[in-house]
Image 1 (spheres, helix red, strand yellow):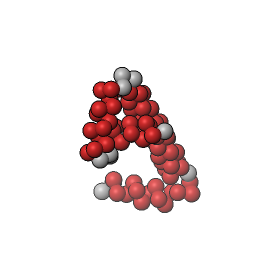
Image 2: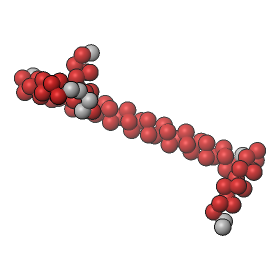
Image 3: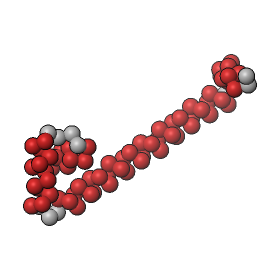
Image 4: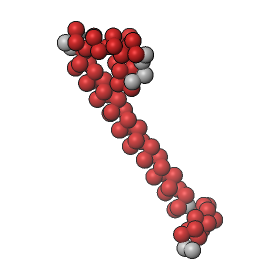
Length: 85
């Protein structure tokens, strides 16, 4: 677990200068560490991509409700009036 924290600090550049220097030395001394860094970086990218897709889907759901349901007609008209000027 400590290694995951160190890799995260390295990836996000949040550690102290001393921690960064120590991690750089660990990268040199531990031949498997660069691969672990790569996999952790890939995992972060996948989580970020999933989060973006989920957020886009939520926004689209809200958009559909606001612009297609009759109960929001007043809101729809108000928004459309901004673009008709």
